[in-house]
Length: 86
Image (cartoon, rainbow, N blue to C red; front, side, top):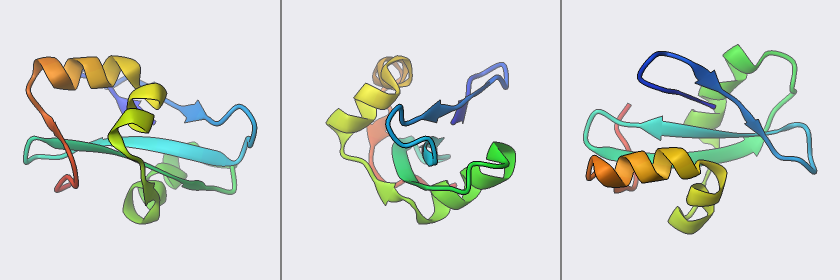
């Protein structure tokens, strides 16, 4: 899940395991990263933070597959892929 500049939320659930969530985080330090983990699948608005806090870190190539538009935008803004501060 991520929010664009307008605050619109985007949720991406894995098509094969409906209780897996990927969350893109853009830090205040110019880094961004995608985290993934299992969730109960009941309340996405509450579950996303736990995914960002404790989820597994995706490598850059996999993150681009989950969030291609965000990856392109981040590249244009010269954001780096790595551990963000949030």
